[in-house]
Image (cartoon, rainbow, N blue to C red; front, side):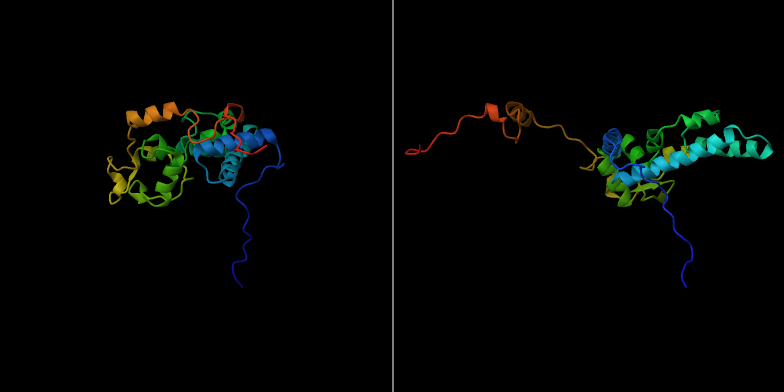
Amino acid sequence: MGDPRKFRSKYSRPGHPWQRARLETEKVIKKEYGLKNKKELWKAVSKLKRFQEIAKKLVAAQGAQAELEKGQILQRVARLGLLPAQSKLDDILALTVKDLLNRRLQTFVLKKGMARTPSQARQYIIHEHVIINGKTVNAPSYIVPLAEEGQIMFLAKSSLANPEHPERTIKPKPKSTIAREAAKPYGRRRAPRQMRAPAQKAKGAK
């Protein structure tokens, strides 16, 4: 008969598809963190909302079980590096989606100087060049725990493990190239219409 389970979505989409302010904010965040699509952003938002919903329920809860669950949620966010060890439930409610995106493996690879751009960091991870604690991790969205921050490195067999690899070094442009680019303020783009020279008419044309 197959698996009788009903697979549910692990994230929720925005309530309204056309909100200009939200769309512009999502566009900036997507570019800043090198996300593949907005689905990755919505997953992070949903994950953060789950933390905050649990915190809201526990703020007013009392009893031994409530204290146990409060300690568990605070230990979890501290283990993920989202908050310091001595934080409170109100601090969870103050977290933003950027706090969670900053804990992604893709972001760490970029911040450690292992890649030059977010897209390049994503490529290295997906192609299994990056390891954590000796294990290959090919998920750019992996949330790096606090204890694993210093264990992110390139696979020993990977050519990228060499710091002098061409894809890891940024070579300065020659002075001649910089001078040519400075002399062409518009680059390969055409100059604005009002600055173009008027086209000459062919002989005999009216």
